[in-house]
Structure formats: C-alpha cells, structure tokens
Length: 246
Image 1 (cartoon, rainbow, N blue to C red):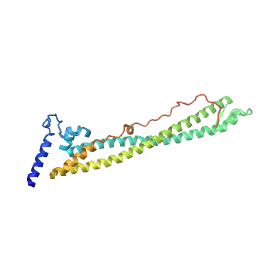
Image 2 (image 1 turned 120 degrees about the horizontal axis):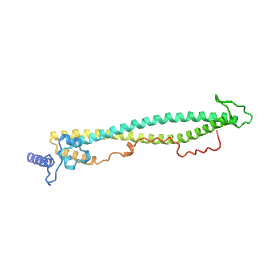
Image 3 (image 1 turned 90 degrees about the horizontal axis):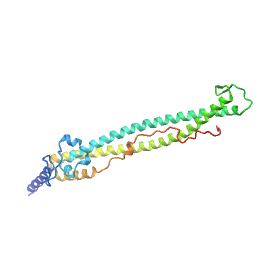
Image 4 (image 1 turned 45 degrees about the vertical axis):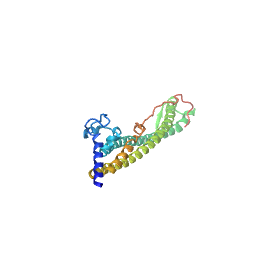
C-alpha cells in the first residue's frame, strides 16, 4: 500500500512538472516560456511563475541569488562613491575653516588701520603691503565676502555630509540584509537539489512555496542609488555687503 501511495505521488509530481517543461503549453493550454539554463539566467526572479518555481525551485533560488549579487554590486559601488564624497566633504570643511580663519584674522588686523585717519600708506597688514586706503578697503571687502561664503558653504557641506552619513548607514544595513538573504537562498537551493535527489516531494513543495513568497520582496528604494549632490555655489548670498564685521 505504501509503495502504491509513493508511486501515485511520484506520478502526480511528474504530471505537475510536465506542465511547465519546455514542451510549449500547460494543462490549461497557456504558453510557458522555455526554462533552458541560458533563458532562465536572463529572466528576473520576480518573473518566475508559481508553476515554474514549483517545477524548478533550485533554479528559481539561483535566479534570485543572481539578482541579490547584482544588487550587492550596485550597493557597494554607491557605498564607495558616498565614502569618497564624505572624505572630500571633510577636506572641504577643513579648507573652508582655514580660509575663513585667515580672512577673519586679516579683517581684524586691517580694519583698525583702515579706520585710522592717521595711518600712513603704504601700510603692511598680515605681511602684505597696501599702497592706499582704497586698496586696503577693497581687500577688506574681499575678506568679508570670503567669511560670508565660507560660513554659508560650511553649513551646506555639513548638511550634505549628514545626509551622506545617513544614506551610507542605510546602504550598509541593506548590504548586511542582502548577504543574509543570499545565504538563505543558497541554503534553499541546496535543500531543493537534495530533496529532488531524494524524491522528498513534501520538502520540494514547502521550498517552492517559501520561494514564491520570498521572491515577492521588493528591491531597495532608488534613493539608495542616487548620486551624492554637491552644491558649493553662491546662490542665496547677498552680493551687497554691508558693514564689515570681523
């Protein structure tokens, strides 16, 4: 009796698999794509139907693994870009701080000399010689402009750096999840191959059902792959400088 039951189950599975093999049509008469190895490799895991997954759970798992590997490669590429951008932002912030400090020091030394009607020209300020009050004033205006630009761009850079750090954290979290998902899929592929070899039909059905659910998972948001934006222009900065304050 047990042998008859096993034989019936084997025949049922064979009939089910025949419905999705490359013969051209299922029991309902609908055309089924060829599941040859080359074609299967080019089909997205999400395009596998439930019947196709049931017929070849190991193949479906491998298709999902390939997509996870592609996703991981994209994530690593974006991680590298963001890390490069983060390091550049740190260098830019240091350069801005230095430029602002130098301009402010010049202003603090030059402003009293420019205001003093008794200053004799040419006058030396911060190691530089100025032939007239007008020349010194023009340089003081430029120093004031530098201070304003540095302060504005420092805020922009700090904001962008914070966004980059948050996005980097998301990407690294996603990379960690991706690695776990690939490991789980590899175990499912191995289990499917073993179950097929052992004719463990209950295990094959369970693996196929599990894969049908897991292949519905969406890829991460395109936000993770957006290029880092850099904006160090002068937009929004009032070109009409008021009083000089150092």
